[in-house]
Length: 251
Image (tube, rainbow, N blue to C red; front, side, top):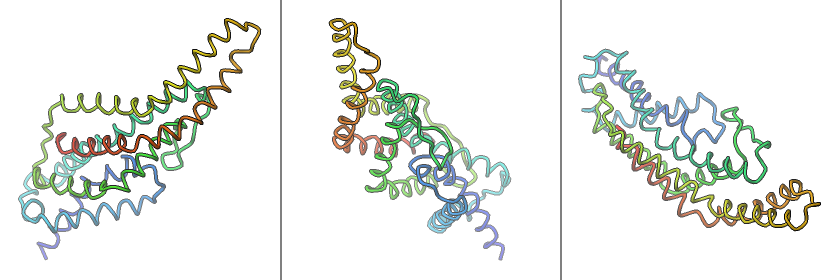
């Protein structure tokens, strides 16, 4: 009976390592899933991890630090593991926001029903494209492998986040470069449209350049956006793979 209670406590503590990714990290926040389902999924995955790693979880001496301190450590570890995915999708939203402003869509924002926040139009398309690639490939299986490896490297009750800050800074630089590379074709098309309109304004000063610019850039964005997304499948995959490979290095 004592072993059962200790195992139950270990499952609840390990679920704190999983919950931040399911609750706050994209692509899981792109779907409107009830909170109870997320909690039950985190507990179920934690039970699987505890059953497969008994020595690193409930059979270990995790209660020597106290349940409260262990829970705080597990929560911080879960946040660290979810950070790479959050930064990758934040880079995509930033690149999309830049395109929105350049194309004249800055005033038009989408309301995300899951997070109840305003999101850029193009950035939302990028985020959903990356989410589709994540679930269509081995993304969920890789996440399970990361959580399993984290329990082997950092057993329950011995949380100590000691990742190199240079890894995080290099990762942030790389994902933002990849995100803007993904939207580079659209940005180039909008720049050429601005250049053409600027030349037209010099030769036809009586033309309403602002009104014409909004129309031309909106049509250019709608024409080039499907092409850019269809040609960026490999870049989506590379960004997500890089995010999942960086996550274990942050702990």
